[in-house]
Length: 153
Image 1 (cartoon, helix red, strand yellow):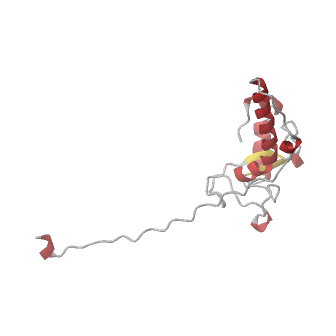
Image 2 (spheres, helix red, strand yellow):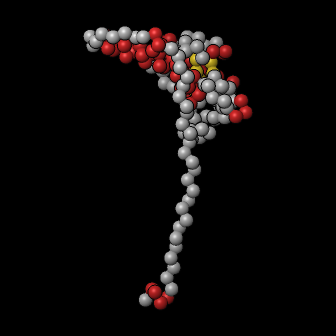
């Protein structure tokens, strides 16, 4: 996941090396999610592999490093998880929802609109159900016509 420019200062200078070590040395290029995203993965661990098609979405996997406590300054091993895009977005869903509510309220206040941010808006909710990949297409039968010598003349 790209780091937003306003959050860049929160990451350690050696973040690219830390992230690469987690994703490729520790995780071996495979998503480490064992249900932190809210999904039950067959075999207990997400099967998504970096650079390959995702088993659920069909998109090419780009392995990322998720902060389980949503604090980029905290780079302890137990706080970092190599995650495919699907698992990472689901892990961060509640956090994204809260920050989005705060951002929208701040924009409204800056525009001079009155409003309030109800406590209910800040409750974490579960992530939405992930999309399923489209069914593989089967080749349509090709109809071939042949001409006999009489038809060709």
